[in-house]
Image (cartoon, rainbow, N blue to C red):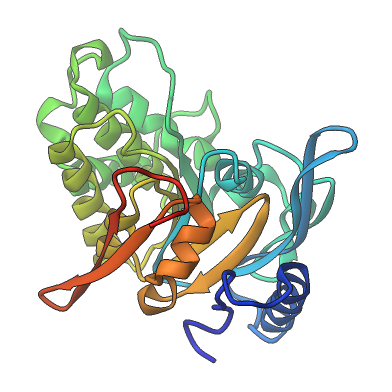
Length: 298
């Protein structure tokens, strides 16, 4: 059962709803038997408008100490799921479990000491310095008005070093490039000293150089610090390259969850994105080549 415990082929000649229901049952069993540590969601449902449900009973365990990507077509619910876990949204039903406890029963400071988040778009005053922004990551430990402690100073220094942002720590945000800015927001999240990091499309708006720079940095932090990383990605091949596990979503449901071999399947990706693709291997690594004409016909 292991990494690909919940993998299935949505394009097989089986009833989609029946398979989906069985898969959800498997995930619930896995959550109940996974022990207390880590992050999971159980039967999560959400709607922005009454009667128009966006997420339909999602249950998943997110691998501890691994990098997991959420992929799927626009509007499938990836960012909604991440924002629910981050506490930006509240579920209509179901639970988000942190070390076996529903996060709605925990104090916000406790959650913030365990889960950090970097969104696709973040806002802060243009004239604030990099160092001051990164210090904001210490808020769960010292509040807004208390003086910084030696522990705060050390955490901020480490976060700046880990993200290679200490060299412009005195610069104003307005003077930074897009790639530099994302590293600063990542530094602020690291200053929280959490075990779990949520990333919502942080490579969007970046060119390929900065996309690879950010993802290599995240991979390095995962290896060195053992961070559990859950991130929304649009690029399937970047997910194949940098992630240990991938969750594929479609129409507010999880269709596949597993390792790269489980997800790197033409049927799975055709179903998820409504396109035609071919899986090829280069130097032993899986890559997805999409039909330039799009659509579901080869």
